[in-house]
Image (cartoon, rainbow, N blue to C red; front, side, top):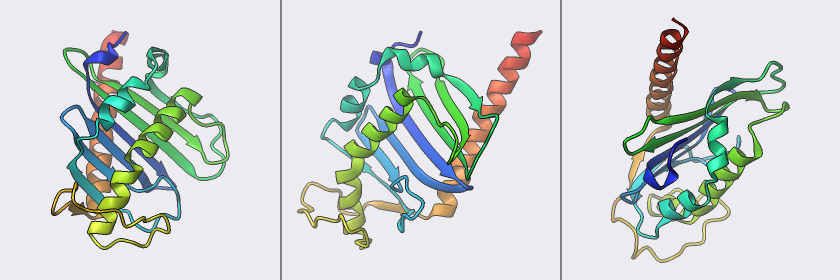
Length: 190
C-alpha cells in the first residue's frame, strides 16, 4: 500500500461530454494549477498557475484516507447514462509507483466512490479562494462569487493558458498513463 506521507503531487481532472471541467494540481513545493469549477456552465476555462504558501497541499494530503487506495486503477461503468464523464486522480509518491484512479461513468449513472468524490470536493474548496483571486487579477471577474479581495499576497502576473492547450496536454498525459497501464497488464498476464 502506498504511503501518503511521501505524497509529492496530486493531479485531479474531470471531463464531461468531452469538455474539460476541472483540473487541479497541487504540489508539495506549493505550486498550484487550477482550471475550471467542475461545472458544465463554467465561463472561465483558463489554466492559472502560481505558488501558494497557505499549505493547501498539506491540508488536502491530511484529508486523504489510506482506504482510498483500494480504488486505484481503471474502471468503466457498464451503463453510461447521460454525458460520458471521466475522473482521473493521479498521485505521485516519492520512491513508489505512481497511483492512478480513473473512472468513466455517465452523468446520470452511478459515479466514483464517495471517498474519491470527497477528495475532489476538498480540493475544490481548498483552492477556490486562490482560483477566484487569480481570475480577478487577469480580468476574468465574470463569476458572481468574485469577492475582490486584496491582491498583495498574489503573484504579480499569474500565467494563463487557454483551454485547448490544457485539453491537449491532459489528454496526452492520460493516454500515456493508459498505455503504461496496458503494458504492465500485458506483462503481468504473461
